[in-house]
Length: 211
Ligand SMILES: Nc1nc2c(ncn2[C@@H]2O[C@H](COP(=O)(O)OP(=O)(O)O)[C@@H](O)[C@H]2O)c(=O)[nH]1
Ligand SMILES: Nc1ncnc2c1ncn2[C@@H]1O[C@H](COP(=O)(O)OP(=O)(O)O)[C@@H](O)[C@H]1O
Image 1 (cartoon, protein in one colour):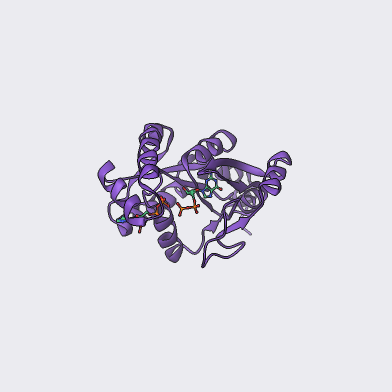
Image 2: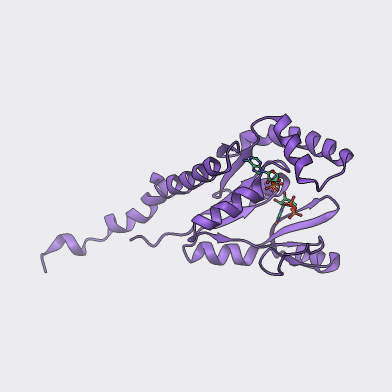
C-alpha cells in the first residue's frame, strides 16, 4: 500500500529475564521479522552456528569493526564484546523490513541515541526473587556472578523509563503475545502512516477526471 520503511524493534532487559527465550519463541511465530545477528568475541557454544547465532570475532577483528564505524552499538559484557552490525540493519529498514535486536541494556541505550526512531521494549521480571531463580536455574553463573548480575539488574531496572514499552515476562507465551501486539500497534501509529499519506494528498491525478 504505502512505500513504508521498516521499523527497528529492540528487546532488552536484565540478564536472566528471558530475552533469548522470548526472542526464540517470537521468531517461531513472526516470520516477517528480520533478526539482526550480532558480532561477539565470546567463544562459540556447542550447537551454535556462525552467522546464525553470532558472527564470532577475535578481539582484534572486533576492534577493527569499531574503528571502521561498522557497528550501530556495542558493549562489553562479562569480559567479551557484543555489537550490532550497522549495514544489515540499515539495509533491511530501507527495504521496508522490520528488524529485531535482542541486546543488553547498555547497548540498547546507545541504539536509542543513534537510532531514536527505534521502538524500545523492556522485558521485566515478575520479581527480583524470580530473576534470581532463573539465573540460578540456568546454571551458567557462579554464586558470586549471580549476585553481581542482580546488582546490575537493579541498575538496569532503573533505566526502564527510557523505554517505550514494558513487558512482564511471567508466562513466556503471554510475553510473546504482548511483543506481537506492540509490533502491530507500531505499524498503526498515526505519524508513521501520515508521512506516507501526504503523497496521496499531494497527488491530484485521480480527482481530476474519471478515466
Ligand atoms: N549490546 C549488545 N548486547 C548483545 C548483543 N548480542 C547479544 N547481546 C546480549 O549479550 C548478553 C550475553 O549473550 P550470550 O553470551 O549469548 O549469553 P546469554 O544470552 O546470557 O545466554 C545477552 O544479554 C544478550 O542479549 C549485541 O549485539 N549488542
Ligand atoms: N517466562 C518464564 N518463566 C520461567 N522461566 C523462564 C521464563 N522465561 C525464561 N525462563 C528461563 O529463565 C532462564 C533465563 O532465560 P534467558 O532467555 O537465557 O534470559 P536472558 O536471555 O534474558 O539472559 C532460562 O533458563 C529460561 O528457560
